[in-house]
Image 1 (cartoon, rainbow over the protein chains, first blue to last red):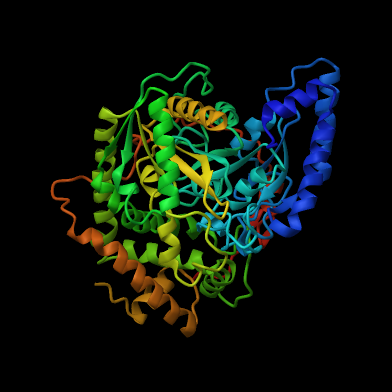
Image 2 (image 1 turned 90 degrees about the vertical axis):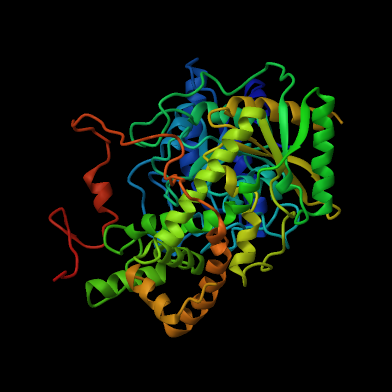
Length: 473
Length: 96
């Protein structure tokens, strides 16, 4: 049975200790780490110390928080004070974070216990976790397949039942895609809802933080705890909902199936599963119909101009002087150039170069400005759609998990895995990947639901209702 | 149709301060060419009279009062990562 937060909380109520929960998590981690390469680092001593503190406080009758004793894992691009933060990169291999990411601090304030840092594509650049400096993570359902990326380790950790929740980041699908390939719930909240303070920056206009879990209810709980304005992240929204957890019955939603996401490029087996969910939603009393959003066909092209541009800017800080890897060099220029050649993976370099190219003099208008202008068309099309529909629907990806090594020789082929996830990122919309059946090779399929900005609670409520219907029938 | 030249690859590599050997530059030239060709489908999109979107949640310059905030980060923790430092200052190779 998959681990959930209520399940572990029940165990604590029935006499288990936080120490036992943490030990069980480490035991499971040790069982699977060699075969699946889920994590980059772990800190058993520290976790057990925290567990003992929680157990002591519980015994003393103190309020220990909503997640007291619950072990979790964070993607290794979250800065954690006192343990390694590498972003799965050679560039940050020596790095010791001087502060804690806000999202992790908030979870720890509620008693949750961080046990390890999950593997990812280096600097979160990738869709398969194959770009990690620490080797790829394997898909929990088939070790010959990728877990998706870039939050592959986080998705695998939950799918393998090491922990009931993990933190990931999503810039163009990096929570939703691995969630889809690994058969877990992956939530991308509205842009700005969760503070990114202490998270290694990739693309500042689309990066978000979110949870990967086995149930929608757990995803809502984690969002409830990590959402909110943070003075240290000036892109955070000024307000949030009182709660993202809902027990209200979701009535009569208008749901639009994105016809551009149901076309020829989608595997037949995925289309069948998506249609099953559409039928379930109709049975639940919702109004479901097709809607065409032609601007969404531009999303991947926009994304692979805008995001590399922002990446080239955010990765300029890795200079071999203030932190991270530093090359042997005889002058300043050589220090920069060698450090960055040695520290970055091929995909990091690719994206920095594309970004620099599209921002450079003579090319800026034709590429970057054009892309950001086309982005407006995309944003407007979504806005118009949300005047008519409460939620939009489609698959997360055109296929289920592909083979390790299948797309590594062709970067563009790899980018195409994101074709249905980048649009919500470019518009800052909340979106969720919900496990929806498997294909004939028993590989998970993910259903994507997208809502308008700040409608995260409504999105979660509908997803939860559909999830219940799935487990029933 | 994108035709990225080797010279252009070298130019952007120099701009972004990444040392590339000839083999790497040639490989990247092919890859960049293919990727740029894909994204150039935007060329035919009519964007006349449309403003660019740089920020999707309507934020404009966020300001705060000019007061010191204690982030509770120690000097020692910050310096621990610095490659070379002396008397609390960072040491860098000669710039000029």
